[in-house]
Image 1: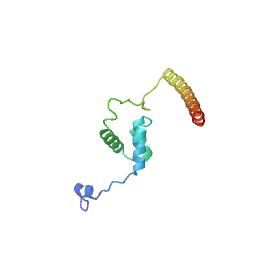
Image 2: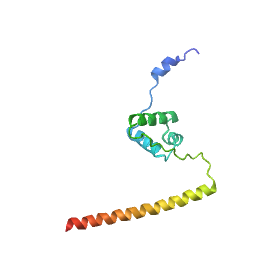
Image 3: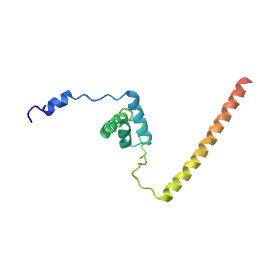
Image 4: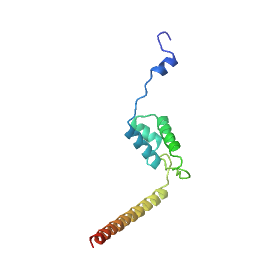
Length: 120
């Protein structure tokens, strides 16, 4: 052990790499939305999973009033889905896509009607 720095010295000399603010915001947004897990984000951004968890935890603490009672557990890729579950989810996804398209068309119609009213 001759020549090695004691643990206290190593901790003092260690400088944590700074993650750009935009990346941190993107990580938090993707995690909170449920699109990606902490492990997926850690691999993608080259950050330890514990760091991701700390970032998200701090975000929830700072914004606790916004998230009161709104937690939805995201579907993680590790869950094994049955073929019937997959088919049901795909059908639901298609139905939601159609509803979104209809809502977008409705919105476009309302915007056109509003423009016509403004012209008159």
